[in-house]
Length: 391
Image (cartoon, rainbow, N blue to C red; front, top):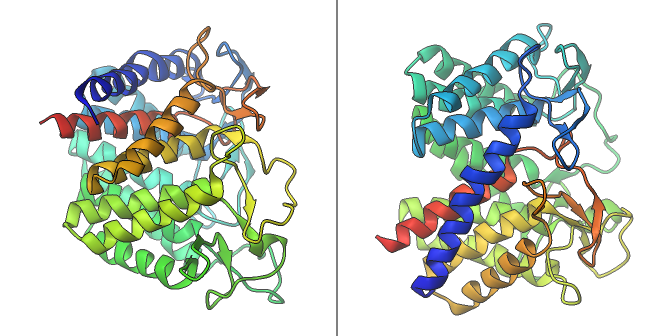
């Protein structure tokens, strides 16, 4: 990448994060009356639903702590991170079983708990960043305890009815992929002793069950032994999800100096770029079928914000780690397409949901699923990677 392009991208990612994305959320989502953050925002930041998604409470708390620890020790960021952690502590854990809610009212009264335990993974990394920022070991203990709940429930769910019967057992990419990212964060923030054990175990699971060399594919859902399930759920691929997992593995390879891990991550990116990139309109499709059959979900060909974010990171990291020119070309393609369609020039931040052709589907800036996470993480990681390459 030439210096002019690199400097332009650094400015785009850094300034977009610090001058646009973060100020938008801080201005509009902080709930000073009841604590935590209200994330359901319209285009101009107007709150359109006061309920609170627990994922987003943990994710924004993590982001604020991450920025405080790794960008600048701004008192506002630390204060807001503590603000988020307090709401998590006081309202987002079910005292009956210690698990976390998924959806609560503005005041913190429980509405819904999901069968899976991803709220716990995001709360764990939030507590980890606060432990690092404050030196308070109570946060470190909360991080360890919440991470263990995440692991335990995903390996042996209790107190919840399974989504499916035992007629057709399945395993998904989500748990090992999120375990890698969570353990990586906790290794950095609190030096979690078992972090690398869980990272290794999760990478092994992905390699053993989800990577299919013969058809060059990362399967989202497989049978217990990795077999492809020839039904809608088994054939459905989520390219953005697999590409997100690809850069987690590449990043681990970079940290360890492990070329084999880097190759695995690049292989995942290669396969899913070929399946996910939309040659007609550009951008990464949401779902595709492993056999190119019709998809059951009607939003399959939409362009959501987060697969584009993850693909920007993955292609940039692959380019830096391998110097293969195709990755720089792919990064330019995904970056340029995404930045020409998602940012809102009038009110800041990004739209989340576009039709296949890139036209706007919804003016939502946030909801139970979209908040200040994938976009600001992409901006932060992109800025960090490019800044490293200038040294």
